[in-house]
Image 1: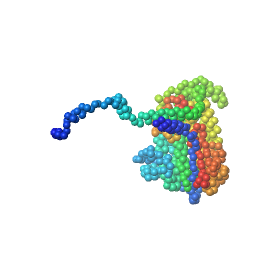
Image 2: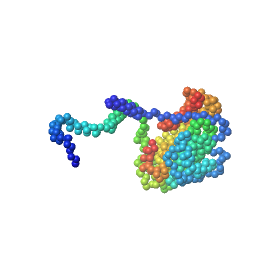
Image 3: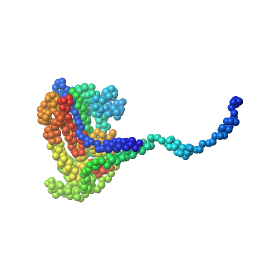
Image 4: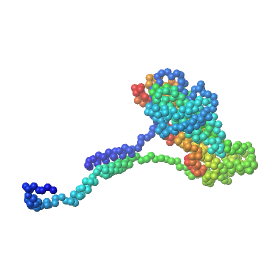
Length: 456
Length: 141
């Protein structure tokens, strides 16, 4: 009896130690590159990730995207949690019959989405964003529907991949990438962020593709995409100009001397909205600022005090705004330093509106930066597969040995990905670390592994 | 009732029965009752539960003692001066629907930029209104 007790107790102790042991540190996601299709693929652009220009139709895609969202919302079948999980399931494990039944409920949605993707342009025709009117037309409901549409496309895509229908799978990817690109073409920052997230989901599907044996190579399909694919420049500039659109009189400040009443009303509007109370110190600093800019004492004394304050406030704001716009005009690896300096400068300022706007704008720009890098690294993976195909499955000894295609540059540095490549046990490994900012999950990094020829 | 057969001598039976003496008591009643009660309670349930709990406690104690110390996390704490933007605390904006809507939008942007698609609320009205500009700025640090 006692012996039994000792045995069981030891077993429990061991179990306790194992359960309490710290989980292994999270690392980059591992993608095992599959051998490419051996047959000729019918041209470099047989597979595209945006609709072929020959399939494009004239017109605006936005109404059709909205109709697709409406069709999704009004579909009789409400997707369950279990069905939602099909979008993340391995294609080999997908219950194909259930998936076909599910997709049958959304034929109209998918058809409309395909039509939208094939339109030549996309103009959301949203009214200009102002502080006074923000709640009138924020397309949150539609954004939620498009999020579901992206999941539906993933489900359809995985079924097509499981059945080896690469042509159909590529068409499904085209719809997803077109939606993402259109969401980033203009509009609000929130819309752009949803577009970037959908692009990331679609790139995840491309990673399934490149792990599927005998899958065609997508290097040129990826290279033909616009760069940056998710361009947030317009939406960030739009957001930064919100204060000017909300108070058009601000644009007259530098050219005219307002009356006391005009200045008071304008200040009441701007500072009232920002819940800011200006004091004598602010006025002194404002006067000094205008003197530094070259205005005379006489000129400043002729202005209402509120105008002096507003000019100072506006000049600070516009200076930071212009620094950010400079950064947005440059390639990412050149823009990073300028953008980081502009953000730090803005944080030190006392402009409430900048401190409110900038955190999200900064994160949006960083999201674009990560997205650019995601596209570049998948192109690298495809370049690696191309090399393996033309060298009987062997891995390059070094990254620069790949000459089949031009090698992508890292958008973060403007240099190649050479430092991230190594050969281990005959396997080519491209390990790209987590993108900035610090603190991002390690699983955002990627480790692309090319199997050794003996393992294929 | 049947009549006794002639061969049986009842008197002899009576004499024989009278000759029987009670045996001395060899069974202890108290012990018997004790053992009966103990036997009725015997089972594996409680002893097993005791065993398992004890072993688990021992196992977790060992695991706790050998667990590595948690990594030190460094948190940037800004000095109070750098936080001061407005000379007086901002009043809550319950009365100003437009401004509240704009700040709700700022808050929504922040959530979506941090959490991606999971940061999207079902509707704009479902998005919480920050209680003040200061609290919103604090939450975005």
